[in-house]
Image 1 (cartoon, rainbow, N blue to C red):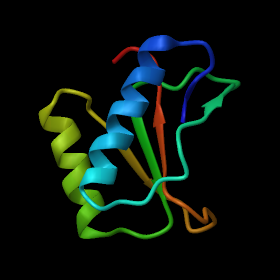
Image 2 (image 1 turned 45 degrees about the vertical axis):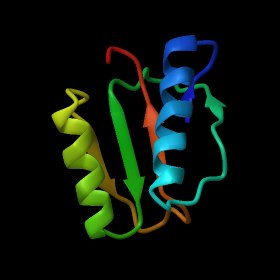
Image 3 (image 1 turned 90 degrees about the vertical axis):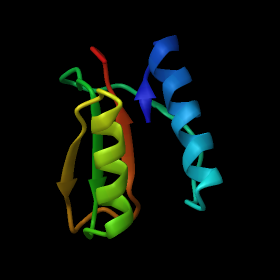
Image 4 (image 1 turned 135 degrees about the horizontal axis):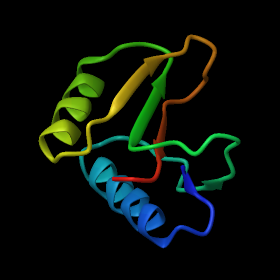
Length: 86
């Protein structure tokens, strides 16, 4: 998910989607969203903790994105939110 009308976050979202698809992850595509509070950085929301998610968080951190991961048992799919101020 990327911020509405923000070309930089949309491009990053598509790039991450391509990388993750090549690594075997499934994707429902990139979508844009409007938030009441502007999200910052990379935010990952998932129902369960998995080793592959920990690897993704570590990799994004090494790239300098300083991602935040949140366990949310009520979400049905893992969401990666690309915010501002990367």
